[in-house]
Length: 74
Image (tube, rainbow, N blue to C red; front, side):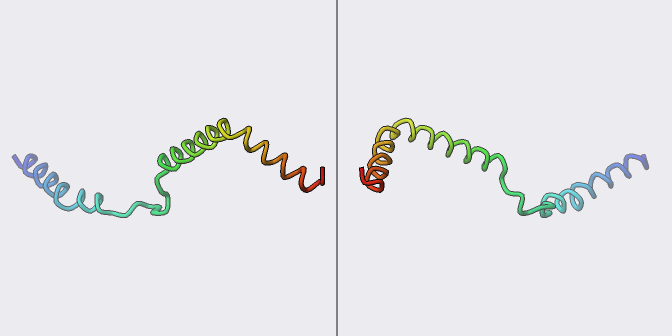
């Protein structure tokens, strides 16, 4: 019976003191950030840029050639 009381007391202490203190504790490195979120943001940005380049490539090449021709005097 004493063993059961000790187990009950240990469980009660764990639930009332130890776990709430761990749950509310600050992480070791608060500046770590959200790595999976940043990876997703980077991938989405790369896909967006690649898609825009596919669509706008002819127009961008034309603008570049016009600028080069104006600078070189051709």
